[in-house]
Length: 233
View (cartoon, rainbow, N blue to C red):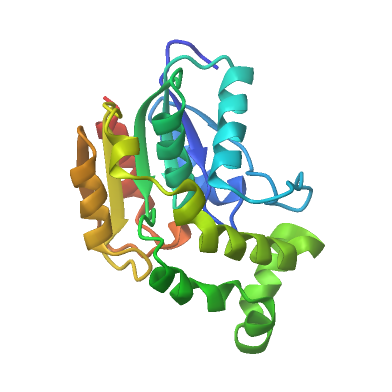
């Protein structure tokens, strides 16, 4: 890493990999950032498989990554799950070197009702019957354990609020700048839950990304890179 450049770690979303971030990584490198990324446990063809998917586990993985890279002042751009992991790390690790967090499409409402809406798309049999192109995509992306990935992700979501949910108390001591970004065509995350989190954080701002859906690959990457760059000046 070039110590003269700002380092930014890109964290992928659930059912994703670091490959999803390569296009935004190129745009950020062109703007002069040092970019780093990795795959969360259980994600990708050759993934290390954990005993249980937990936000806490992924936060520990992030912590180990930053320690290994000897990062002292780092920004995080987290997509969906990645944004939640970054906020969880900052809220629970006293020596966290994270100095700025930017999230995209991160869901904060993990009530039972909200989780139930997500579960059908985490059912392998349902996907194969109704959306075979998605099941084929996931198999290519994650290999033969793609069904296990769906099951583990569903289990994590069902228990997230109880085990690793971010509370107002958790975030009360988080004083670094936080930027929460939501695509203007996002149908997974609501503006209301994102605004609530913005109100809970002391130094936060909400940004809407135009012509953008929930999935990063269907977002306005050039505008996103501009927001990231200006937020980190």
